[in-house]
Length: 261
Image (tube, rainbow, N blue to C red):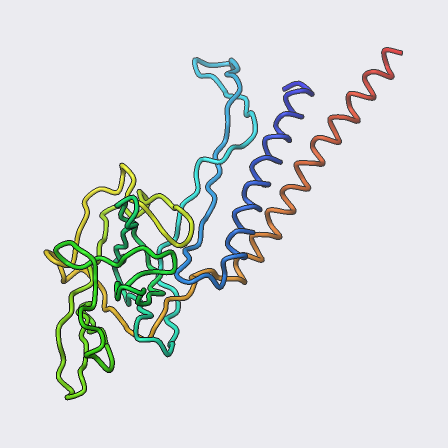
């Protein structure tokens, strides 16, 4: 392995660990983001060329490291209590379905920070409308007739009138996927179904696989700050070690040039 190759190996390490530090920083920044899911970096090695050895086999020369991908930990976060009936969390499996009324695009989210808009549609903070089982938006007709609302654990929304009678409004649509790693992060706590999500399940046909919907609740981030701090220290130390590789190669090049002089 030449000096230049060793230097490029160090550069690849700097790139890999700077990406890893960026991912950890993103996790830390979202430690209080509702329903945020922790991301994790996966490293891989690179091969530059194959060298002959004293056998019929060959030995490969390494060329540094690279980022193979970033995966998401979909483990449930801590459930927090709130004072708003429309704050909803899923205790277990599932994602809420919300639709952008302008584009018609459907997103999936664990963030149940919902409220009623001026047309009595149940919407998220971006104004996307919460979907119901069987299709369509959750909308409360004659909202003035109700004094309170509540949501059952199966996602059924009820309005309570001044006589105490409960009136069914609709059931929240939930979705799940055989491969959640196929979901594509869109920001604002939203995901879309990528080409590799596999089979899509809904609570209208397979309710037994879904968790319980909890009103007056929100799911907190699942970021473990202690682990993120440890990862940050490890990645920073690795970054510094790779920078040492580059400065060592630079010293070797300077020594070679001085020899020629």
